[in-house]
Image 1 (cartoon, helix red, strand yellow):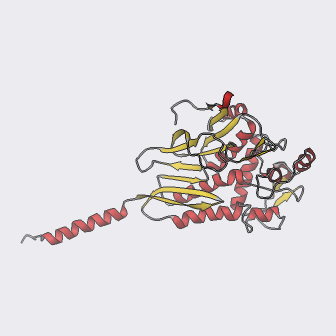
Image 2 (spheres, one colour; image 1 turned 135 degrees about the vertical axis):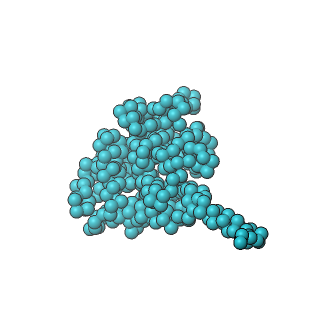
Image 3 (cartoon, one colour; image 1 turned 120 degrees about the vertical axis):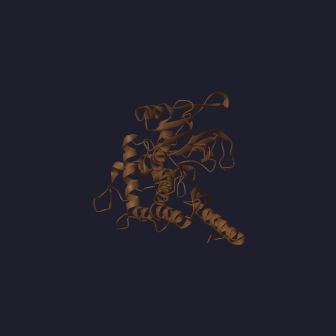
Length: 332
């Protein structure tokens, strides 16, 4: 005898199947907030809310590397407290030392006393004189500080300080990306304070579009006019520039990028440096180093390291600016 399927039962089966399929299909989610004293945005495709994992990754970086966190590892290191550092601090320290050596000191997290002296750090500025700079330079240099196999920081002088602000946001983006990878996320964009990691495609099945701002003096960070948009996937990108963090004193403009090698704010024509690399920690550190080195040395570095791409905006005559890039037009 043939079974007869009644219409209400068939409708129940169809509706139930649709509900099950809709629940299992991944959707793009957007999560935003504040961390490290800046804003973050994470967009990812997944069928579950991963906010706890994302926040956990960022908070771990803050607990290790934030000089504004009174309980962080780096605060204890700067206070010369006795402690064993964690794996996050060790990873950033070792990579910082690598970039320091690669750039011959242009990237140097021990520059904190000079950054503070010029009024750009986490302490109030002081009256800067030649003798002040000469005195502080005796505390500058990653070669004056080391990490023991037991996980302890050793300084030549207890006044030496560390500031990972030029690498920590990029590292934070990397840590969030690792969490998303571990959760099986195939498509995502992680951005913390402008330092970005992208993987796969966006919700429109295209590469992620990452904008680079025009280098317009903008200390309040209100300008959102774009110089260009790069189409990226499976890489990291970071930008450093002097057009937002600066001040004028006695008619002189002082930019926040301090050259660790001479102790003074940089005064060359490079307005912003954007770096594309395989991880954001490296991109973040190199963007800062390139702002110290200037466009010619930055371009030369990219030529020696084909895995690194650079996009540079340089001041020209009569208030104009021009673009130099180390990669072929149309690559991104």
